[in-house]
Length: 250
Ligand SMILES: Cc1cc2nc3c(=O)[nH]c(=O)nc-3n(C[C@H](O)[C@H](O)[C@H](O)COP(=O)(O)O)c2cc1C
Image (cartoon, rainbow, N blue to C red; front, top):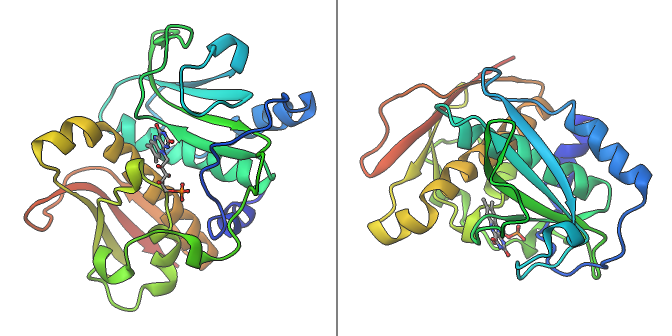
């Protein structure tokens, strides 16, 4: 699967919450396993692992009943949640590009059949996946419920670059990201949440930022640019928290 194919599916992907519970063919699971070995990481120094489980193994307590779940584990080092979002969004796009439905599951805590740790790494997040029982894709970008570009950026002339980022999924569709700077250097920050929302979504919104960075990286590449992503601190607008600096090079 090429990055260009991952990019194209951004414009039609959606969360699939209703599945045909028949397990996927073994070759599709093997194809996924092979893809997992190729995913791009934001932080090479953070050890991570995936675990693929069936509905029987998880005996799901989730509202989303799917034939398979893919669980992500990580060392909890600086930037690990952003890294998790960046990696798992590639998986979400890969599944969608192969006409396999998927849905991020982060709000509910998984039951005890999903290990909370694996080889010294901690559980971070999971995706449900399998054949969708309805449509796997949206028909047009009109069907995305998202903020406008003007609500998420102050950068002018970056419509083409940021449109795929605008369409990124986020926990509770909260879309707390904000993009400042210019078309050569973009600062990604997130709106600071109030106390209640911070408790509910604090961790998730860091994962969301990683998802947005995944779409930004694919979008930049599509425009023939290399995105150099740096997670170390920078000044951001008041009320916002720094997430990343993205330098775009021709
Ligand atoms: C980090 C994260 C956690 C999520 N957790 C859940 C969840 O627990 N249950 C669920 O039904 N959807 C969950 N979602 C899916 C979002 O609700 C969904 O992406 C958002 O509403 C946008 O809709 P779309 O994905 O169909 O474009 C989650 C999404 C993200 C990015």
